[in-house]
Length: 264
Image 1 (spheres, helix red, strand yellow):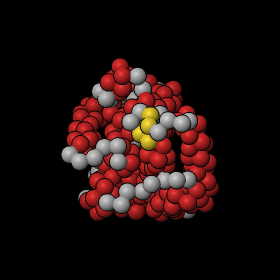
Image 2: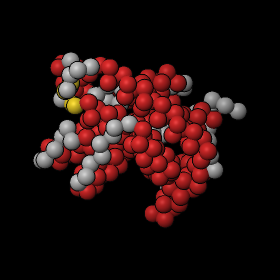
Image 3: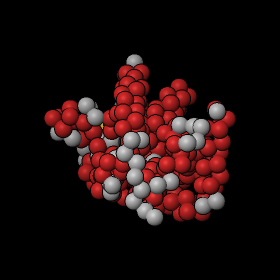
Image 4: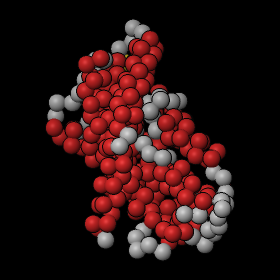
């Protein structure tokens, strides 16, 4: 059974490889995004050396690594699941000898690995030449960051799957999927780091799983979080991964009793 799930990763990786030209152009688009944010934040800082607990160099690195990390953890599993529910093809998954949720996770991982090796890594190299990005020199920081990046993928994928499964109950969850995408980009710290939010808003966001997707890994990578605090933020990611399993399981179990086909 394990081999079957591994094959799902390989198959999705090869599928993405067939459209690799799209991702090469995506590197340019992401580089432009990073450039726009770099000049925006440079203007916001002005003559100030530190804002929101970050120096200009840390902010530049944070923006670059956050956008390139997004290329790894981002996927459209919510839309895939919603479409499969609408056309009824999800019913076939019920009779197959594997877990539908795990299959989707593995497919997302295959896509993420493709983006990591052929998008994020070369993209980060290119961006490092274009902007004053300060990469960590400690191998331990790189190791912890990669672990946290994997948790970012897991948590974001869990949220995507949960959103997609709501198609069982809402028939059309397009609005929810769009709202989820905006919420993840904004509240995870991709657009604005959490430390720049007002105190009450930052406190509220700490009660949500979004910080574990972008802000926490980015803070470790840039050196904003150091020492034992690194393991604390890694623990926050692990806790959210475990907590999100509960609504995912409950929703999937309830959804299986509500399947009906909207298409022909």
